[in-house]
Image (cartoon, rainbow, N blue to C red; front, side, top):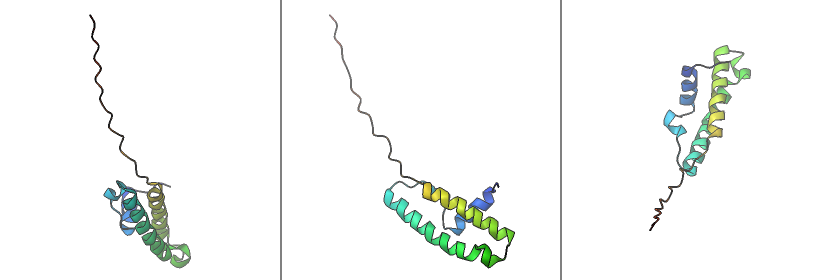
Length: 95
């Protein structure tokens, strides 16, 4: 099943996420982001669970979109920038 961009963005908004949140630079920020998203996800799942919504298809699609976004949040990793290479100059003298 393909989800539209609007559905994904709505799920991100429901979790309190923005596109810029997916560019974390430190491990502390990543841990805080994942904890915040997990808390919002649990609250949203409690509201959208099929047992509570009596099979409402729209709520079911929202729940699926939340799951997709949470998978992406859990897969986030902090990538260290590559170390700068030292430039070594080599001189050769020929006589």
